[in-house]
Length: 323
Image 1: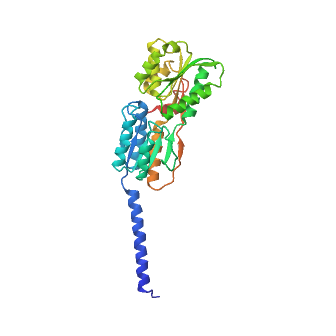
Image 2 (image 1 turned 30 degrees about the vertical axis):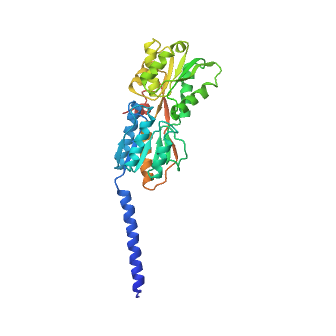
């Protein structure tokens, strides 16, 4: 059978076009991606675990990863500047734990407008997943706060006076934990809230000072709840300084070697532990999948565990605490 030359030319051209498309897709899949991961801060042990999870995922995927965040977890301006820096550098994508649910909207919008996908971790950002950002990977912080309340209620046998020392105003993650705690605690009429509106600040030192300034109320209390690593450790230091450690039931959030030591000594009754490594690992994997054209979920709950002296040495908890 003889085909017209014009038809043969069309077939050759179509095949060449198909091959060129395949080559483009192959190049896209094989190109060396460069992403950025931006934490709320860089000093607390929690963020070291986040970094470890992100780096593990980046290594497995064979991509470049930049890690940069504010020194202090209240420096919104610095975090915004870091996002803008990575956008101007043309990163392939960004994973960020927003310091402020509203203040970080503009820089994230700017990244998405330049086709730089953004995955939110740890603390929510106002907006619509799939549109204003790709997805959120985080602890169910409201549920974590309720978990903390249940642990304190158990330690107090359902009655007593309680102090809540809040984290930093405007941070959505700790706010959700505080509200979850209060929602659960207020179901119990034999619990009296002595303090529920005081903010500790960013660092353990600031939390220690805030707790010392509340000593008159704390001395009347039977139990306390703190919503993150800094507030928990600062409160523990204040209780030790005042000779109240172990006498007032303390339930905190997050883990670090000093907090685990306090748990072992009976100075802390329980810690609500997140999965920071898993959170960051999954977020980086999700971001890269999206960049490579795959469908990804718009929300993932990275989970939380309650750590007590009773379950501290179980394989599951030891695996969670492993560096």
